[in-house]
Length: 276
Ligand code: C2E
Ligand code: MG
Ligand code: MG
Ligand code: MG
Image 1 (cartoon, rainbow, N blue to C red):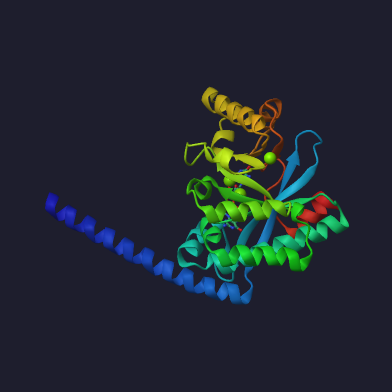
Image 2 (cartoon, helix red, strand yellow; image 1 turned 30 degrees about the vertical axis):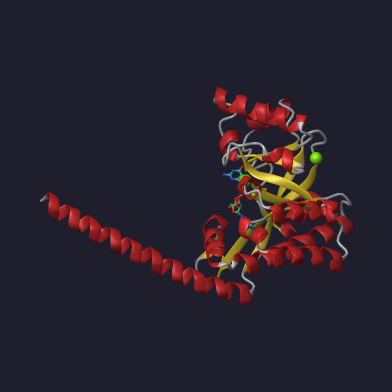
């Protein structure tokens, strides 16, 4: 009996793995097509300055409008894009789209507006990509101060001289750097003194319980205090209700991002609701 059930579990397991591999294969070939056919779109989520209450920045978040399956979340396709290397192509399109969007918004609505763009670790490892971003800035005449690059702690933990140099060149152009999902990755903080960082983004997992858990409250408070001592500004992400917003604001958090203001929106809608 036991043996029998073990064997059938194994059977389920292998067919599950086969199904996964099959899905992955289909998604990958769909993604190639999506690049060619322009099925990707960039959505924008407002980031609000807690002192002025104004929307001063937006995070660019990728969406895939699949012709059959509807909107696919980046949590689903970015990992596959990373594994397969397609992220280089998709990422470069996202980057160019977001950069020209912010230039337009600066010209029409707010000369200091910034767009924050997510970067995968592998986009930092390919030197050519970094050079491409830089020459894009130069060629398009875009003001570097309109861009924030969101990276994760992992990129800074690797002691990579190239990464350090590239980050420095970015910052020379006025581009700012944010650490995304702060507090969820490595606990070593020494990279904070090696790199010049502009923002920490407190991860949603802390924000979720900031009103209900003493621990998460203390941790958020400590992150904000530490950041400010290092001359780093703080963005709280995933803020959903007024209580969370108030607590974080009282702690001195500089910026708030989350559903409390808005979900990520298509560019046109973002413009109509928050800029026009
Ligand atoms: P992230 O960079 O940490 O982005 C924040 C995520 O939290 C977004 O999910 C956003 O929609 C979601 N969010 C914001 N406020 C709230 C809230 O109040 N409640 C809830 N429940 N969620 C909130 P999204 O757009 O699905 O993106 C997921 C992740 O995919 C991003 O996490 C980022 O790591 C990655 N990603 C998205 N776009 C890109 C991209 O263009 N390039 C790269 N490399 N990664 C991307
Ligand atoms: Mg992000
Ligand atoms: Mg995040
Ligand atoms: Mg600084």
